[in-house]
Length: 611
Image 1 (cartoon, rainbow, N blue to C red):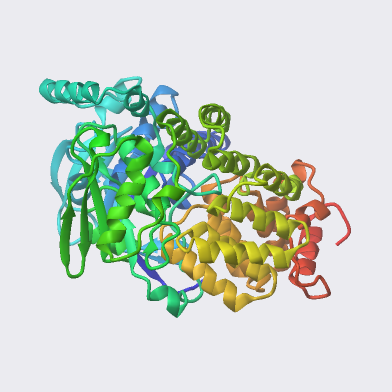
Image 2 (cartoon, rainbow, N blue to C red):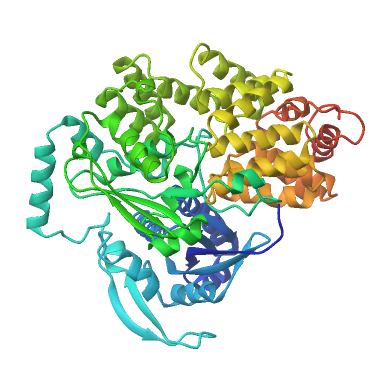
């Protein structure tokens, strides 16, 4: 992991418990328990579910960053509403939008100080926004803010205008939105009725698709430091294109987001373009073009709008350093054709060859709806609902490969599934996909299963096929980086990892977890511990990161911390052999090898078994 500081535009979120010092003086142990319970059960899950990244937990407070102000405000509103309903400790939250300097897992900059000052100005149970943050949400979310005017704040030369959201959060059992004009509501409803299909009515009920994406890891979080070196020269020559989340006049926002993901997935096999992954694309939702370009590291932006019923097509706007072009919407016969048709328009605009449309059989609209619902449920932490939706999708379309792949990924769960059965789960996932065509999902699972079965050459063969056939699959490059590092090919692993981050500059949570494993393998225990800690701050159930943290701390001689880190693994009855088995090294296990250092670390930390 590079130690070079990075600058990033982010929504900065500061939360604090009101009256903490007084409460501690009255009941130190009880107050501390309440604070920790509130952080674990309410605050951290709400931040993670809105794609936020926890930078630090500060006793009575939390510092986090979000990819957009809208996600930060929605997380804050949800936290305050739940705290009021459940009689938790009272909180204040401040949010601003600005550029931060990210270094060594922390963030710096004047805007961090502004967010802290805003938190102090927020009413009890309320949220305070700067003018910059308010400008991003005004008229776009269903909450009413009060303008408190300009305020002088400590160490900031210019006064800060403050907007607050307060009374409705604490006085009602749930948030009440600002009422939309009756005329607009009726027009939208009439338009949806004209679209006619139960397809659109059902899709309007889907939620959290913004977090569903194409990540095969079954979880996602933004904000990882850069890879240790730049992507290869050949990779850098491919123009990087970001397809930003589409908007819609009459269709549901969830449908527009879902179609955006379909467009990006349809571009996975294009060799002449590098395409930003869905998770990072969603992180730029609602940002002005210049800010989106800075966040994603590209000057090529594609935005889309559905001006009428979805089957009437998508109007595309393509922005590049040489100017801007608009493409009119093209009507389609089915929902499954919207994404490929828009992808074809994008390819034409960039003078790239078109994919063979005949090779992509249409999917019944109802089956596609269930597939999208499964992705949504999985990203929202509802695996049982996701399984049910996938079963329904396959009843409607028994040959739907994407649904079968998602079923296999759900069973695999590399991020939060138990380490003890990871080799067996990878083999079972591969068996479920036998006979299916080569897709990004099938190739990733086959590569992983081959590595766990002791066939590293076959694993890398699958990973390289994935690289050639689907050069825009960011998760494929991540997997290839991990496999290369396991085989002792450190330089090639770093190049593959850099490519993964170029395609996914605001990457999902497992990137931190696998990066921690790679760093431990390379003998960089301090950096491995830092990366594993970041992963666990975002997803406490990330067992691979927990294992790296446990072994890394022990290797560094920090035995008390290592014992605490391993306590959760020990509580689940994990043995040393089972923990080591989740790291399928194929490049030797002699004295001084990464596998031997890992086993020694586990033993020193207290896992039962012979090192």
